[in-house]
Image (tube, rainbow, N blue to C red; front, side, top):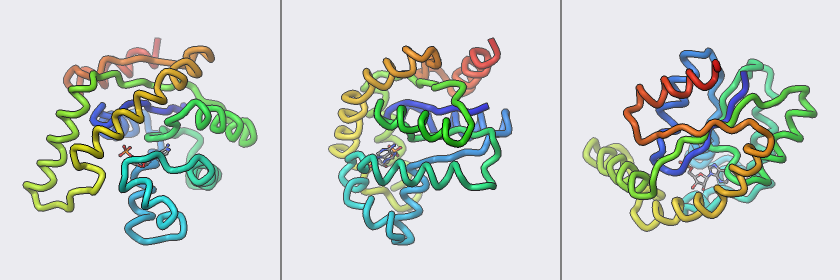
Length: 193
Ligand code: AMP
């Protein structure tokens, strides 16, 4: 099975991804993790992406698409995977389909974790506070104004992204304001129907 998971900051993408990957034995491919690792180790790609990530802006498509192409072409990626953090735009979604066609694969479902803007903001602030309380490096893009910018960007791109997957009949919308276990159950139930 091949899945992508869509949702704004604090929608629960990370939690649901980890759980789904365990339950369904999928390889997890997280663009944000890849970007953060690349920035921390100051690779070429990391240096190019850094100014965008720090401001909460989308990293330009050509960089991201190259990244995904490399990752999904690697042999260790089983044919079952879950992409988290990509696509964020309808353009990226289309590019993913082109790439999969080349690789002889196809996407089964796009799972959209739906939460209100206030839930996104509250959960993101809470995560940022927890990181600070535990003296774990707080991320530059976890500051309130940057979180707001990430939420705004998400809402700007969302309608076309949902339209893309809706049109191709591959969209599953899940209420992600429920407790994480319930969200997981809803996803699994819709995947097997
Ligand atoms: P996240 O933690 O998933 O909100 O991602 C953190 C940051 O990584 C975003 O604010 C963007 O700067 C960058 N990023 C992650 N995924 C993408 C993507 N698909 N396209 C462009 N930028 C991305």
